[in-house]
Image (cartoon, rainbow, N blue to C red):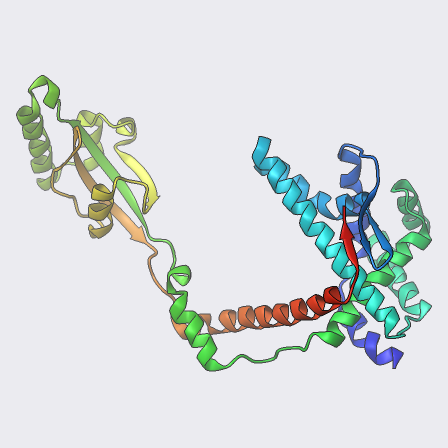
Length: 329
């Protein structure tokens, strides 16, 4: 009974030792030190704050690059809460493994460690041991960590039924309900000429006449970029009115509607909006296309299979939680 539970899992499991050695633990040295303590108790087993920090640190490093101040603190607290939940779930799974009286032969873990030494240290066991020592890990602790990973993977494989197919109706329903998400972003390559109305100075009629004159020159073949450099008072004047590629919601709604309905190469009429007159030219456009069902069907099926397996896993874990004593601090 032991071998069937683990053999398939080990065959498909990626090596997890190197990221632990070179990533999370290295990151821990960069983080502020905290006094350790109990983060949770799971049926008598203790999870410490240092375990939570060790799991959440890679995520925290990314968050510190993206957020600051109160937003950063909120994101970090959420990352640590998610890490604690994962650790609690892992402990429940390991406890379930022992409760069902499964056993993991020692040579399974030894083979895993030897694979790590071969793939990440070129077979140099001394370098591997030295790296462990530098990270304040003993070989026994490292092997225990790898054993837990194997157990969790095996128990998930045993308790979460593998989904191999999704009904065509569900796939089609997803396609219909998520067309907007599947559609590529629509963009136009835009140039713009802006002429102030100067209405407050009583010059609106004269300014509109200038705009109409520019439009006439464009119709006669004058280069748009040259006209923008000569007449526009927009910030892109020196660049010939070039706004580059823009997406929807970049412009005011009135300008957006016209810009995204212009065929490539066409110039708009004179548009009066607020205190300015505008002339737009769309040079190119792309996006806005929804891929065919046949093209995205494999991707949708894969996503729905993952979601179904995730639901099964959550139900299994919820059952373990319901029977457990869990206290967090």
